[in-house]
Length: 563
Image (cartoon, rainbow, N blue to C red):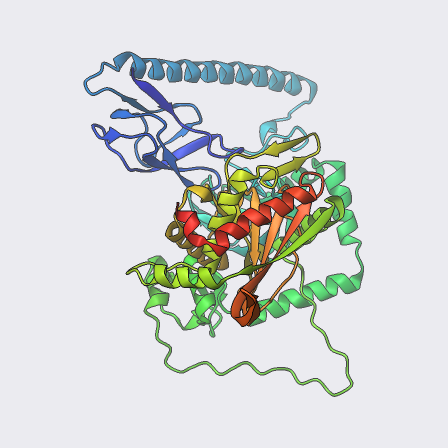
């Protein structure tokens, strides 16, 4: 029997989706788990897999087209099966919805007209009042108020990292307006409207709560200041009080913030709207800007080959500096003189501070410390890496060993909530990665079912994209257990703070060569210290100890992970 595939809800805020790419075509055989298409949501472009088997009989939404959640996307069934009723059913449903929408719009329009007529009777010579209803909440025709978007499920406020448009610029639907720094990553924010950018509510480096005024787009010549004032006056008293409190902070804090911002602007030469030496503006794509930052390239010296001279990816890749840049002079400080630099906390740093403090002071932490013999693990890794095109790390082995051990101890793989404990049967391991602004935790999903090489490839990919801020929010959500490894820095042992709502986090130290006792003899051996931080509300001491014993069996005898 044919199965109707509807547009999926791939995020909690998703209302409609766009088919970016179809990876299957009509007539193709579909297996359960096959990727049907790439769907562009309000947060990211995500793969959409099939939960059915059969033949792809019909595609309802073509590439580039957009539809609401739960609308007809495709039909899968047996080859030659009659699906005309299903197609007609989907079409008729859409027509009914559209007709209902039109009728409701018509009714509301008639109500508005009647209200307008009564207003005209009450207020003499009040013409074109629909364009001046600031107090009623209506906007002039063609004007859209753009608010701070919620780019992740945990985002409470955002910071404008870079504006890619300036006031007066023409904006087309799909143009990137700005780069927004969330609690997890810096993400591009595109416009869903066309018009002229009339007003910018937040300057680069400034932060605001979700749904706060970000910008106004509309026809050229519209009085944006009045609209902005009206929008701000309609905000809740809570938001207004917060802004007043923020503006009433000490002059010293504001001065230092401004100074730090100006210093940052002077040092940074790779902004998306950078200025060249002659004062002209340099247009650059977000990807090219990030690449330039990573390579230390001055964008004013790069000739753009994109539209209107915009610097794009290939310009950075092909750029060869004529003269190497001289190192920046470091300010000299007189002996005995105090000196410091203040810089505003990034959005990521503020969220890290908030969540780690909450975890440390709400979850009763306790720590279990162990030391593993790594001689067999070293020999195992050497043999595996001798296989062509295969390379695994000790961290990959720890991830795999933890995943297998967690399947046996769901209590350690649990999550604490105020009203319940969730015992997870699936294993999603978060791997802590240090980045410039703090720490991110990309998630290796279903780690127990992955091979060592697959885990290694995923961790390497996540680590690289973490440092270039290219991870999506979905890739940093849903962990059931976390691993933090500082062994590569020579740290022998340390403890970590639990990544709530997880119940435990494993701290991994360096492998150390030292004398050990084996069979009554002192020999040279290799050991590694680990520390398991547990939440006593969900993991009892004996349970944590048994988990570590199981983990020890996998790590000290790595061949057992392949059985």
